[in-house]
Every structure is written in C-alpha cells, then in structure tokens.
Image (cartoon, helix red, strand yellow):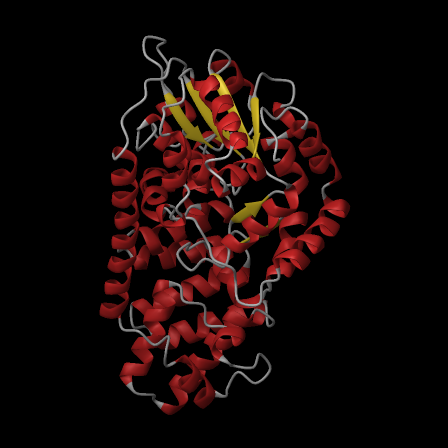
Amino acid sequence: MPLDSSLRLKIAEAINRSAYAEAHAYISLHLNDLSSGQEFYWAAISYAFGSEDKEKAIELFDQALAAGYDAFWANFQKANCLLLLDRVSEAIDSMGLAHHANPVALTGDALFAILQETARNGLNKEFVQCVRTMVAVGVPLSASVHGVESNKATSLNSFVIKSSEYAISTEVYTEKLKSSVCEFEKIDDKFERSVLAFGPVNFANSVILNSVPKAGTHLLKNIIAHMIGLPHSNNFLDVYNFFDIWENSGENPVYYVGHLPFDLKIAKEIRNVKHLLLIRDPAQLIIAAAKAAFDPRIDRPDYRLIRSNFSLREYVVMLARGYQIDGVSVAPFDQFLKDFMGDWLCHDVAVVDFEAVIAMAKNPSSAKSQSSMEKIAGVFGFDLPTDWADRIRSASNPGLSATFLPPLVGENRKDDLRFASDVLAIYAPGGLAAYTALQKRTIFRNP
C-alpha cells in the first residue's frame, strides 16, 4: 500500500533536517510501498547518507529516475555513491547524465570536469581521494568557491591550486567534525553553568514560548532560562513532534519552547496554557533566514547548492517566492508569515517583538528593561528576583548561543534590509499586514 501522508511528512521533515539515519529508519520498513519518483529519491538519499548500503542507494536512485524524478539530482547523488565505492568510470557516466540534464548547475559542471580530467590524466591518488572526500562530506565543488570557470571547467590546474585549502582527508574532516561537536558541547556546558550560577525561581503557570523561526528565539529563551534558573525547557516543539512529547497534566507547571505554526488541534491542546509568541520584523526575519543558508554547520542539500551559486540577496528573493530544491520544499514567505504569525491573531497570545528583547539585552539595568521583564514574569507567574539585571546581562552573551552568526563578508545590513523590505512588499503583503497587526498586541514595546 502507498505511504500514508503522516509517514511521508515524517520522512520529508527528517531529510529536510539532514537527519538521514532517522529517515532511513522510517523508510527501510516501507520499501515495497514506494510508488513515486520523489519517494524513491527520499529512500535513496536515506540509504546514501543514513546507512552503509551504498549499493542499495544506487539501486533506488535508478528507480527514482525510472519513475521520472529530476535527472540532475538523482544522477548527481548516484555519482557520489559510485565514487564512494571506487567505481569512478560509472561515476563519470552518471555525472555526465546529470550535467546533460542541467548544464548550468555549477556543482555538477565542475565535478564532471574534474572526473573527466581524472580519467584522462590519471591524477595522483591523494588528489582523487580529496575530491571523493569533499563530495562525500558535502563540500560544494563550484565555480564560485574553487575558481573553476563554469564555461571552462576543464582548467584543472587552477582548481588544484585554489582547492588545496579545501582538500582535506577523511581523517582530518572527521577531526574537524569532532571539534565542531565539541564546540556545541562547550556552548551547552557554558550555558548551563551560566544559568545555574543564579538561584532557581518558581513559576506558577504553564508556558509555551512559541516563535517564528529565525525570530531570535535563543536570546529570549536564554533570558527566561537565566530568570527562572532552569537551563533547559522540555523538548523543542514543532508541528511534527508536538503530540509525541507534549504533556500538561495540570499538576505542575511546564515550560516548552518551539516553532509552532497555527494548527487547530495544537491550538485546542494549548488553550489553557500561557502562550508567549515571539515575532520579528519580516525584513529582518528573511535576512536572518537567508544567512542561515550560508552557515557551513548546517548541511541541508538546498543550502549546499545555494552557498555555491547564489548571493545573499538572490537567496532573499528565492525565499520570498518559495522554491523546491533536491527534495526540500520551502513555501512562499507570505505563507510562512501567515502560518507562524497571522493565523495566531484570533487566539490568546502574549506577543513579544524581538526588537524589544534586543533593547532589553543592550541595556539590562534600565527601568524599561525592568518593566519589560516584569511583563514576561507576569506570564509565567513569578516575581522578579533582585538580581534580575545580572541575569539578563549574563543571558545576553552571544557566546551562549550556537545559532549566533556574525556578519557575512560583504554584508551591508542597512542596504540589505532596505532590499528585503522592497522584495517583501511585492511578494508578502499579507505577511507584512499580519506582523503589523500583531505588533499592536505586544506586551511591551521597544523604547
């Protein structure tokens, strides 16, 4: 029988988060139920990156192609699997088909040229292994990164010189990966120690801190954590896991953080819980969302392509319009704003604007900050502790947030925001109206 809609959603969501092992666990039990090219491609990706069975991945990529899936991506990823199995000539053939399907895709163009040159000139094994390793770990092989001109991609000498800094062995990459994981663990450890340095504060009400993605969730979450002396809320809620982890017996107050678009069943479930909704100016929101694609720590297939071939502003337009790349579907930004902000308008939410939170973090000792924090404390049901300003000051340290991103090279914030505002006026008028309406309901304002 075909995959049911709930299972399709779980698989798609896992792949969008690059949780390939999780997707593989779902899909491996339902291989006989696959019917569409999209489903075969999902299965192939889950086997390619979520298991050791590359042969099965190749078989599934072929089935995806037979069912009519995008010839560029299916052949491109199949070529990557063939490389991992040392089947270089077959990888060249598969990459050639990908290149033929989409000649202007720089990632495929550059890699195809490299493989052709490898076959012709018998490049040294170390270099070939570097190329294979980069492909295996998702380092984009594009003209913009490595200096291979898209129309002259056979200029391998230029590529070898300019790619030397990227040419990392599997062992070195593994160590870098471990180091990255350690950095996240260090942030978690620093955050926990920072919170526990302050005494706990009991709160009377169950609360959900719900936020629009990229609205500055970590800053407000960190401030609340320091204020109540609780390093971690319950599991992070989203529309996919809500009913698996949500618990509110009413016996003890609970605190959750999440990104929850409006959903009738969820709204019914949380109607007796205090609901803090964090919003943000849509222009700032879309810039923050666009910058996330350029964070090398996030390994999403669409982000890999975007990092290699598009500028920040080009991606802002893509986000505004919505897109589908390599199995990842992103809704138009107007719909995104309505789902996460506008559709909560008729419900009992305590609205907080990120700009007001920033003002509080920048001047934690001010009377305005005290007033703002008292409004949040009122939602939770606790009195401000005497050291409230010190708690805000500690919570506002950017080093305690794993999602904090410094400015990109060449980023001009004022001009980028003006550009984003113009784009949203065209593509997201409904979302802009939703933000304006919610702003009028904020529990405290930016002074």
